[in-house]
Structure formats: structure tokens, C-alpha cells
Length: 266
View 1 (cartoon, rainbow, N blue to C red):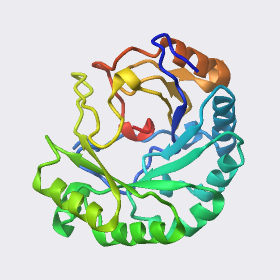
View 2 (cartoon, rainbow, N blue to C red):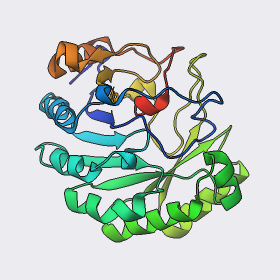
View 3 (cartoon, rainbow, N blue to C red):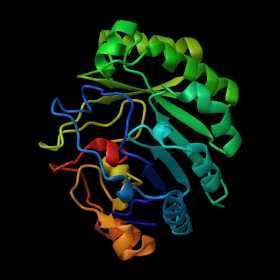
View 4 (cartoon, helix red, strand yellow):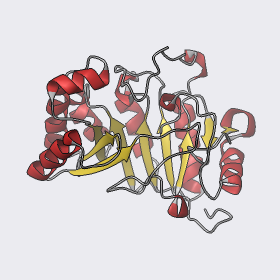
């Protein structure tokens, strides 16, 4: 698929849930979040239908996100269903890693190719502070299990305030080097002002070369994370929602009324 700016659109990020087991301070506002009604969340069959249409239209790369995708019951079943879609060359998942140790083998057996794991610090105390109570030991166990299961290359997603030269980021970078992991440094974004930056070590935020669509947990195709545009697969049908999203994909992101990132698959 080509958009009106000549960009090839071949990447679909799917939020399978807006639920998460952590309360990261840069993700969850102090007042908390309003969760989607469970009946609004796409079923596995709906996700597979939309993905199949997207692949038929040119998508080759699919990533499962959240919220935290591993809190979705029977997530390995969905992975298996998606893995059967001919034409997906890269089937990946972004996770905070807390539940990864117990799911890694099943995910690999179902057909998942690789994982990105969120890791913003190597300090157990700082990790607990940042995530609102998370245990970094479980994340490290999950990363080890992912490697043993063959979910590689393992990539680490590290959120930074300003740059990758911050102490926490430097520690994560050293951990990555020592274990032959890749690392992406993601600077905190501000949807209200439309402020975002290109991901260091990755391609996110590079509007001129953006190849992404997003499927929200409640069934909307978003052509751009930093845009209010969205198209309902339930009202329009998957093919038409995708077609309109590609047609109207903006040249660059801007200020928007971004709802909770956890429902979009940021």
C-alpha cells in the first residue's frame, strides 16, 4: 500500500488490550485511567480478520502490543491464529516482561518470532518506582526465557527524559552490549503539544519514512499515533477502514487529543 506521500505502508501494530499489570508513571496519569468495557475489546476472531485483510492489502510486519499483551487470556492462541496467515514475515510482541518467563515457550511454539521488552533502568529500586511496584527480577527472568525460547533478536525499549546519556539509559545500554541485545531509546512524548522525537536506535517517530498503521483494542485503525484520525473496522469493515486510514494518513504527526496510550498500541 502507498499513501499520498509515497510511503509504503506495510506494518500493523495491534493493541490486544488496554489492561496492564504495571502503572508506569509516564503512561498512567495520577488520576488513573478509565478502562474500556470488555465487550468493546476486539475478539481474537476480529483481530485475525482485520490482520488477514491488512496482509492481503500489503502488510508484512505485525506487532502485538497493549496495554500489556500478556495479560490477555490465551494470548498464545491468538499468536497461533495470526501465525497461520500467509504473508506475515515478521510477527513480534512488545511486552513489559513481567509475565514473559511463563509464556515465552508457548509464544515461540505458537509462532511468535521475537519480542521487545520495556526496560528503563537496571536498578531494582528505580524500576519499582518507575513502574508503580514492578519487580525487575521477573523482567530479567523473562528476557532470559525469551532467549532460551528463540524469541530473538531481543530488543529493549528504554524510555528516557531527554537523552540516552542519562544514568539509567547508560546502564541499560551496557546491559544490552553485555548480552548482545539491541536497545531503543524512546524520549517521552507530549501529545497535547505534538512533541515527539525519532526513536534512537529505531524508526519510530520518523514521519518521512513512516510505514505504520495501528489497530486499537476497541477496533479503530489509526493512521498516525499523533493524530485524532481513526476509522472503525466494525462500522466500515476492515478493508474500507484500512483504505481510508492509508488515504488520510497525515504527512507528519501533530498536537492531538491522544487517549490512553494503552488502548492504541503506541
